[in-house]
Length: 103
Image 1 (cartoon, helix red, strand yellow):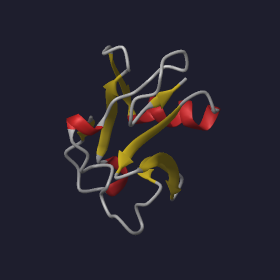
Image 2 (cartoon, rainbow, N blue to C red; image 1 turned 30 degrees about the horizontal axis):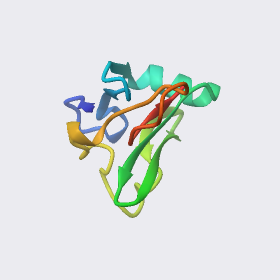
Image 3 (cartoon, one colour; image 1 turned 90 degrees about the vertical axis):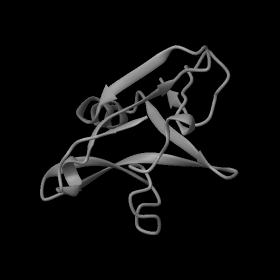
Image 4 (cartoon, helix red, strand yellow; image 1 turned 135 degrees about the horizontal axis):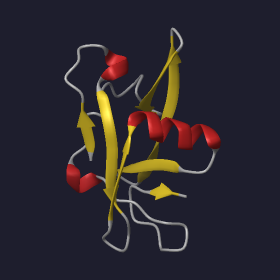
């Protein structure tokens, strides 16, 4: 799940990301928290498109950090257009579900 912020600024359009672990428990993180975890190297986030897993990455524009898919240049707004069904997650000790959050 990607919660949208109501902003026209592309750097502020993702308010939070979330999903479901393989054990069916929910998780949710603000964009700021997700960025911190990705940059710390403790978590990673992906979602499936066909037979590929697409990573969520951190970009910086004019000193502001924000989340995008790794294919944003060729697939605009890909992260914002995800549906609730597309977002699931897994813990490292559980079998991965797609897409996933790995801790």
